[in-house]
Length: 345
Image 1 (tube, helix red, strand yellow):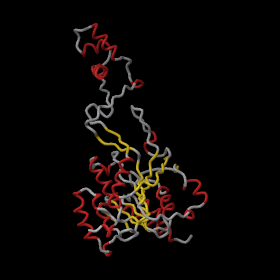
Image 2: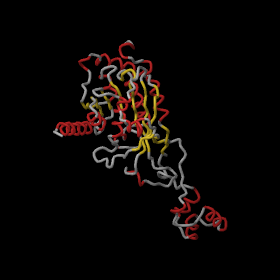
Image 3: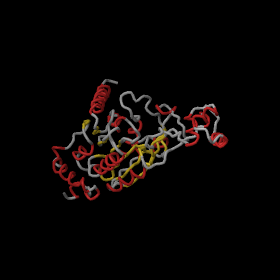
């Protein structure tokens, strides 16, 4: 396959994917096989992206699995997650218009089990029911060297488990025998994969959420904070980028168009999908980067939020999701939106 056919360098892909890409591209390269606009498709985005017409997408805006323990991530290892995101980014390059954008919304950290990581231990002082310290145990034992642990516990008026915890520091976050959870900054990974695909980081916005989401009351035996913001990484495909200030009103430019920090409410209840983003997020991206009738893509469409934003802004859309139940949900919500918009004002 010639790179001039797809504007895509196969050498950027892992070797084991190059053969797959060639076969799929040959199967789907005819225009008759291209995905239609204003439709939601069920399937793996890494396969279906190959069926989108080359250089047709003005912006692709999506929020992938964050790898933080959601239900739909249950079968993903960390390596699986890396492959999913990197391959999805790779397959975007042929279909984004020159000068167009790929926008990825993601939390700044991800989490995965790491058996090589030392156990995180927490001496939760305020939650101790007994004021006995390790020094107290050692002193009592040195004064009574012939006593066993049960006898020392009885002497100090505590349980054997308390003696064990004080001596061995095994009050371990996540369970005594569980593999520890490691956190990792995600931005560098996303940028690396985008560069390998041919995209360049153009901008980064910070979405500051409000305190309405489920974890707002979260607390643990650690100094970790509640995660109150997410990033939007804007990646540019080389080409001429149209810059038109008329896409936004003067107030929109002032309040968020030229601002690096976006403040708007998070979803109040994830009642039909466990990881929804508010419609304001894709709406701003769409208004900022596209014109009416251009095509917006979301390859992790979930409940259809990006498609709804595209409809309201008079753009075309293509949505993809691997979960059939979410495809059906998105289609239902889109039909409701279309019916509502068709009613007389």
